[in-house]
Image (cartoon, rainbow, N blue to C red):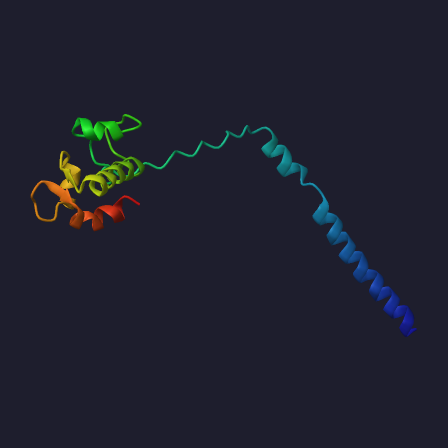
Length: 128
């Protein structure tokens, strides 16, 4: 009698488990048909990152305009780094660079209008 009780109990448990499993795998046609008629719009394309205006200085002269690759009137980070790297190279070659841009005034430590070799540390850091 005990054995028959266990068999019945196991059969009931397996049936309940099997029914739950089958129901979990079934398609909910009501939900599917509701969403079937809706057209989904494609996701909008990600916009490229544009830094704030404070980070992108305006182009003010012909020297800066040479480095403005996209011609938007501002020097983005990559354009500014290229500009500073060329100034750095010029200072390393000739020993100095006469400041012709407002952007370079912050690198002129002594205010003489020339960036010399002793003023290269901050310029070297910003051009990387």
